[in-house]
Image 1: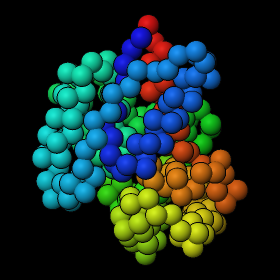
Image 2: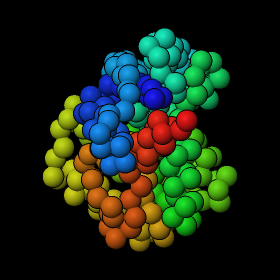
Image 3: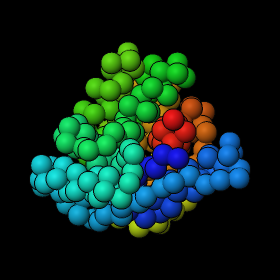
Image 4: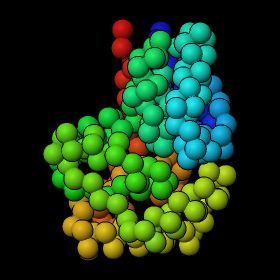
Amino acid sequence: MRTAGLVGGLGPETTVDYYRRIVAAWQAHEPTSAPSIVIDSIDVQKVFRLVAADRNELADYLSTSIDRLARSGADFAAITANMPHLVFDAVNERAPIPLISIVTSCANEAQRRGLRRVALLGTRFTMEATMYPAGLRQLQIETVIPNEAERTFIHEHYVGEMIKGIFRDDVRDRVISIVKGLREREGIDGVILGGTELTLLLPFDEIAGLPALNTTAIHVDAVVLGLRQR
């Protein structure tokens, strides 16, 4: 059996969600066994500090985690959050084991669904980065982000609440309203929940009548596929 390595703690609620989803997906096909998983839990607050202040050091920090997973017997690894993928290429270059990208996995799923113009939600760092637009553009898919005030709202509640496991109904309603506005203003045909805590806030197949791409679920599917490879 292959072993999956997860860089976890980004945040803890998401790591639990990944673990449960991987086990459930595995046992849907192999009900008499359980997947082999190694989790290295790192400090999400340090990741937030480094993504703002020193991305080279962030790449070093994530690479150290990948190295620990490799030494623990992982055959491949996944970083269980969108935002750290800002430095995915730098981490992937030095990784001793293959890495499964949440961005690539999501872009492929958007293409599979025939989407052409999608909204991207997440932390400010994720929404304002080039990683999703670049990855989606390769597949002829356009990316739209909320306006400045909307990005500020999502980011502040993400960092101040969601990352701590706090999910409020009024915040959920406001984010849905933001998606509705983007649908009307920008003509989007789907929405990427580009923050794994957002998938806990909005655990829906559709948001404002549009298909929602749950990056946690999509990433988990790719991890389970990696586990099942021989």
